[in-house]
Image 1 (cartoon, rainbow, N blue to C red):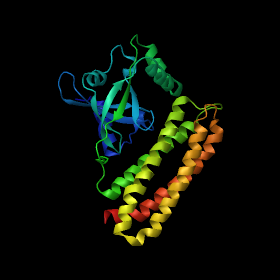
Image 2: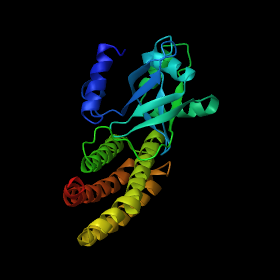
Image 3: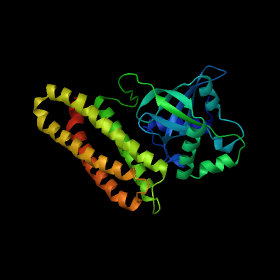
Image 4: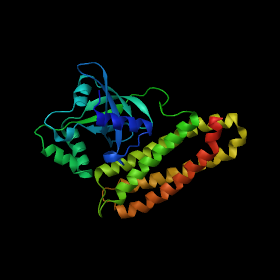
Length: 279
């Protein structure tokens, strides 16, 4: 069973689609459910994560620099099939412990982004593990908090807003000079996720709505055009961010331009489509 503190975080996380306050406010957090190595029972723990491209996220078994690995790490080593709750989506994943240079590069990125990871490593003689959680494809997305199709769209949009807001804040507080490696990964990952979301709407939701409601053609045409415009902005931002010497002061106006276009698009889509999806 989770301790009282963890259970409070878990309850707040699930009640607010991944948003929590206190010491985790504004942090990247997920709920990781492993199978107890001894008990065989499901064990859920809130853990921080690092984006690592569109296919996986990374979690670090720091335990605050304690001398022993956390229980969740021992559990996933015994059974690497885990469940991940992102706040919007819930999915099954395979846990892979990174080894050698791959682990060291990932941990170095984490330290560059937050020196607290280095402080944890300095407190213990064990090598703090880095674990990749790779989603196992399993059909349509699972959005447990959604009460309706329209609500699912809103939750996905809010998740996109939250991720871009985190990236914008990270860029804004960066000093002059090149972007940190992890920040580049964060930005490229959220841009990739947005592109995939829009491609899914273009391929599935919009054609379905167009067949059922022909009068929606002007709305759907506008949304498709906006997808193309936003794709051009994300492509430009990705090109800038991919430059190791990119200056945050140059990138931030591009982020703000993208966010303004994106918010206008999301608001219009919600206004026009959610009432129909729920009706």
